[in-house]
Amino acid sequence: MTENTLKITFQQAEEHRQAARERLRRAEAGETGEVIEQDVRSIVNFEDFDDIALLMRTANLRLIETIVSEEPASIRQLAEAVERDYREVHRNLTELESLGVIEFNENGSSKQPILRDGAKNIDFSIRFPQSVDHGSVSGASA
Image 1: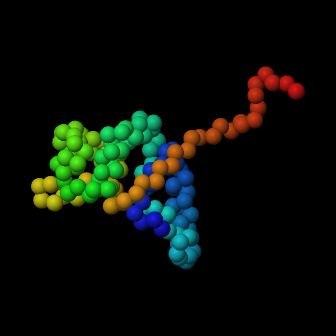
Image 2 (image 1 turned 180 degrees about the vertical axis):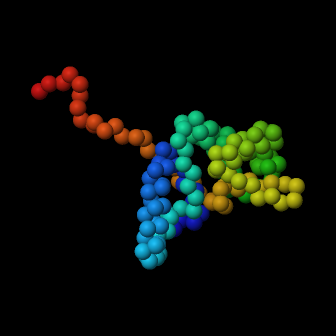
Image 3 (image 1 turned 90 degrees about the vertical axis):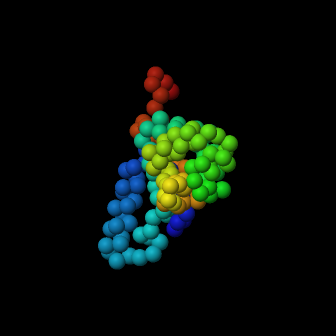
């Protein structure tokens, strides 16, 4: 199991539910070990392109990178590290928190931004729905 990875997916909620049901079925049947473990600590699934676009904005990705690489102790330290205004960074962090990508450890009056569940890596998986009819071309003849 990759305990320090946050998996971010697009339109895969049903796949995650099926995998969780299968792990539960195996656990109830007495199986142990890797067959019943989730391969990552946390999964955040998006169903909307707007959420993916918000996450993938350069400013947000830089914040995420700095959170992981520098582990700032507060929002203010993060703002200084990325050389941006505190209010702008706070607004971006609020967006990332609402998406479920980051969370805060509260230390007295300061809030330390961290990736969800303390993850240190992000694994992106974006799959698009496949149409049922892959081969026929309208109006074509042999």
